[in-house]
Amino acid sequence: MPNCNSNVIGFERSCESIASGVKNLWIASFSAGTVWDSAADGSITGATGAPTFYPVEIRESTCQFAEELVVNAQYGSKNVRQNFTLEILGGSQSARTFTNTILTSRMVLVSETEDGNFILAGEGKALEVVSGGYTTGIQAGEKHSFSVVVSGLAADFAPTLTDAYATTLLAL
Image 1 (tube, rainbow, N blue to C red):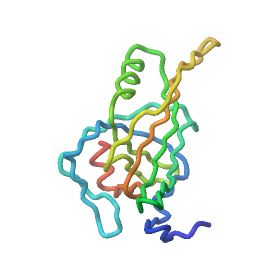
Image 2 (cartoon, rainbow, N blue to C red):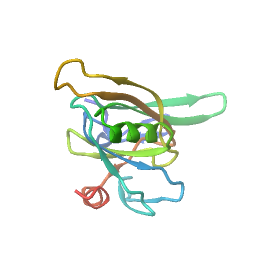
Image 3 (cartoon, one colour):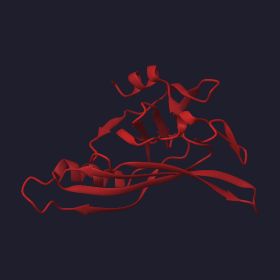
Image 4 (cartoon, rainbow, N blue to C red):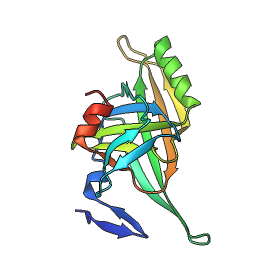
């Protein structure tokens, strides 16, 4: 069991921000003008100028989210790299258009984890696609999919959204 309130090289992390597996995913365009409101515990409670989030149809059990510390002792810098690996379903023109759009976009992602937390990633510095590929279904009825890796640096670990704000932001 991880230490739920560990402080690693100046970064505080609680168990609520640890992803247990991604259940649902939403995407929005990054805007430097968005101001995210947070509570004393660091959870996001609202925003001014919040973008519109759109659900992403992902292949079940293929989306992963991980965070890792990136430290440069020489310059005294500390960042957190946020990485998403996912498969987006669909071989339709709309799915290809969507995928081509995110390939050139800076984005913010919200992921709902299997344990019910909503994690907001990319809210400070944006996320970008760093690699990807396309798989064509061979058998009848198989779906086509796009494999995408989305990554970015952040000043801190990804915050969680309060349930009330997640309901409003994601129109749940």
